[in-house]
Length: 426
RNA sequence: GGAGAGGUGCCGGAGCCAGGUCGAACGGGCCUCCCUGCUAAGGAGGUGUGGGGGCAACCUCACCGUGGGUUCGAAUCCCACCCUCUCCGCCA
Image (cartoon, rainbow, N blue to C red):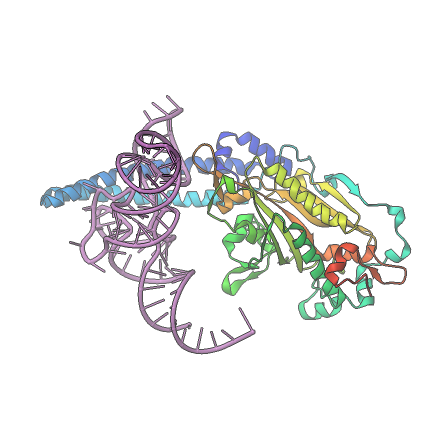
């Protein structure tokens, strides 16, 4: 969430930032109003408490000196103050709660240099790599679900029977390919990123920390009986690893890498991209995430980007990089680059990684701070993350891109060691 | 799931069923200074987080698992919940 003090000291800047997102800036005024009231009330309450404390101490002294009758008067006085204090306290708590609720619904401010725009059409294509539209042959213009069925490596029909639409099942070499991709992504980042295998079911507050709740509860699967949520991305548990902790600046940046299943209800996209692997409810993903100081953030953002991009590049896939405009930014992000891979069979660009810098937005929600080496106190740290590799769409692009005239799939060299040396599938 | 023990500051560990100046003894760690060929040992002081106010020194409130309650006053009493550990049961 945003720092209330920023809303207090520079509401215009906050309003301007929200406007760039196409968000209603009115919430800023509401926050400012409630904030003022909360502070006024708690100041009054605190003064009363101080008074009560002084009186109570006097009562204590009188009791010790056996002057109980003199204490009675003070007790009455304090009791009266107590009634008043209680009323103020209840009201202040209510307002503080309301303030928090409001703040949790306000998205992050876009970064200065984030491009303007209303939606996905305004995203800026930063670069297109390894893409030559004239280079694709007919045998590559087959959709991955056709290829998958033909080779027996993707069984959508039976997955749907057991779990419903938008669930998939990989088989044989297809399943091995899933495993190969994940392992490749983990291995490529093992030099700097600590490998984590986190829980995939988390509590509400863990989802709140990353900004996936309370605003987007329709998007996540919930296990009601135990009040747990299925994570939509490893970003959720990874961000909460050091929740409510204070790290030393010398320990930053902290880097994590995790392979998990990810679960998404895709409630807002009913009917869209329902075929094959374009959009599925459950998928494998390897995520990179870093905690860092504000000063380190630009480098870390570039680093995660370079790693995500490098894997796609080395797999020999065509891709492009988008700089998301303010209007298309996720709620918690300040700046995001998307990597979209080109899948010739479906002839579409598929988003395979969102590399985002969240400034201190998530860390403030999660209570992750660091002690600066110079100076005292603590600072909220910054978080950066991105998919090192999201399986389904990469799998799809790979199978379509590497389909040979004879219908088999050539395995890129990079993946061969992970497929027991196999050079083809099918 | 059943039975027992327990959750206190960076750590250990008092205080809690004698409720009052306890943000919390004591020890360790860490930091500064002194002493000292170096180091070790020794000596003095310091060492939490968050909110609000003040240019600042500083003042004030909250925090002893969480949330309620009792009380003039709660780390200390009462209630509920959560978590951890040990044993038993069950189980991949």
